[in-house]
Image (tube, rainbow, N blue to C red; front, side):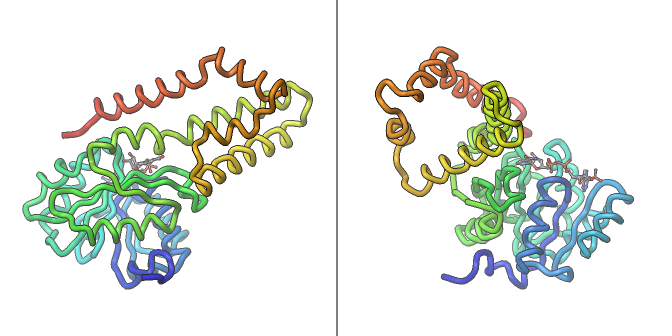
Length: 278
Ligand SMILES: NC(=O)c1ccc[n+]([C@@H]2O[C@H](COP(=O)([O-])OP(=O)(O)OC[C@H]3O[C@@H](n4cnc5c(N)ncnc54)[C@H](OP(=O)(O)O)[C@@H]3O)[C@@H](O)[C@H]2O)c1
């Protein structure tokens, strides 16, 4: 309690199976914060060459044998592509014990799918992070499987607190989370790109337009998070009667920005459900 973020992880041995973009981000953040050490950490990838270069870069043991990596680890983070998860779980299954914890970040892979491929009641926790974890500004939703305890959930939260914010949800919400916060950075980048383009259209140099757009998004998000105020109220405070903002809002309404964003998230959630590996 009250210790530094993630300190509960100190001393734990962690294996990252699939140290690609997402696995790599989390692994590097935990090493950088001193919560894992080169000795307590190992990772796997698919290609020998990448294993060699990653080992040299991170100064941790990186191989291609998942069973070896999982053996003796306290926490096994599965960060391979969703379609590879079952194969990886089968490779490691015979070595696992209920004292270990599996944390999967794979989209559309239910905890039940992992559990059913394991011979014993190994606890499984599912996490859905996003790429801003790279900057310590990620959003990760976490849910537990059948055999995981609140302690396992708390430990997983500590792991992802290091790379941003965490929230615990029921597993039934994971497709919605995937559609909103895991895919979300892509939507925001499109909005930022468009705002920067707009800045260029009204005469600003592109670099300044991009800076204005990005810092404005960051600032507005910070205000929502820190005040807890409803975004509509905050919008009203920017909107002077007969001023400029209301003219812009009319254009946004006419262009159906709101309904388009809502429909985009609904579609992504449907797709996450369709892709579910069972
Ligand atoms: N990217 C995101 O925004 C995001 C957000 C939330 C969740 N996720 C989830 O994170 C997982 C990984 O996504 P990613 O974007 O990080 O993909 P990625 O960059 O392609 O990483 C996948 C990694 O898995 C390795 N790999 C493939 N087969 C393997 C095997 N049999 N054993 C061990 N390692 C193996 C690959 O090795 P090589 O490098 O040698 O090919 C690669 O390093 C996915 O399940 C995805 O749903 C991603």
